[in-house]
Image 1 (spheres, rainbow, N blue to C red):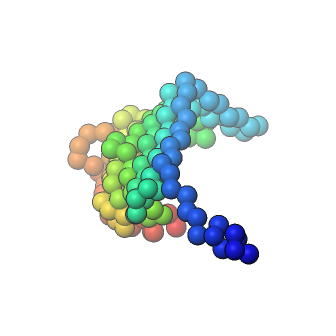
Image 2 (spheres, rainbow, N blue to C red; image 1 turned 30 degrees about the vertical axis):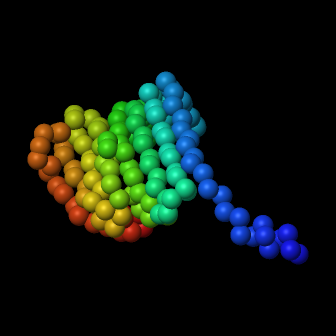
Length: 137
């Protein structure tokens, strides 16, 4: 019993990183086919400090029969946050046909802004200020 209680207080402290990248990856079914080109995904987590910072970065091109074309995506700057909170900084840009874009701008770990632009020419056609909770529900 003495050993069990000692083990209960051990805490793992580490820096972790993982990611994937490649030239192309394709999935298909009877009704659709999606190919991910020139993709890069990476995540880090540092539990040596509290709160524990994390980063998420992603970019690539998706060619999808479900989307009816090609979509490019990139995070710049990468998403950053702490512990289990939503990210507190970063941007995600998605570009589709005719230069149309959707940009997710992280204001903080509570609020985000989403900008829609039908032709890629500034300023955006529509801007929505919302929260992470509303966006993810």
